[in-house]
Image (cartoon, rainbow, N blue to C red; front, side):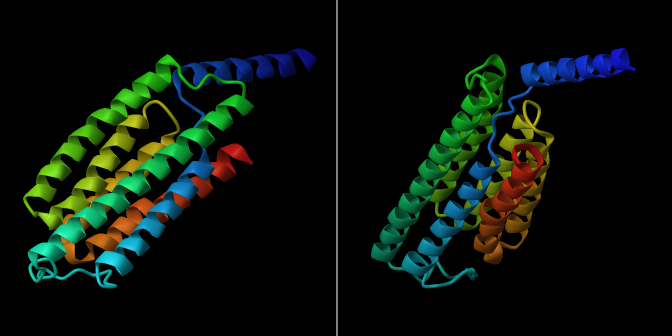
Length: 211
């Protein structure tokens, strides 16, 4: 009986070692929660400071703006988006680093390098496309592009970390397609994709892997 228990324990240890060597397991559920909260805060600031308190943007919303108003709008929304991005990435990196230290794991490994490369390619491509759309005033395609390319990055990353990341990416892509089909609800869907989904994902990750 003891030998069978030892055999099962050995198999469990071997499985754990193989999993840790092939997957990046230092992602923090708390990072997802904070990223979602930051995204919702950024959306709220944008709505009340730059979008006249409107969550649903009709087709003619941007057409009615003067040149000065459009310039202020572009600068303001870009600044909020950049601050949200920096805060979300910074907090996510710090929490993931803290988790790796607590678990005695290295943060920068061949697996984490592959994960980063697989995320950067769609994110960089999407970022360039979004700047082109932004400069040509194709506002209605900006939010769908953000969600879709971010979702593609997560789908790619899911091969090197928890499967939950893959499923989150698929839902982000579907949310982006909905935003493209119903552009008036783009901001609401942005809040859902980057806010609600991140918070939900973070809670699930925290309960499954960190409690």
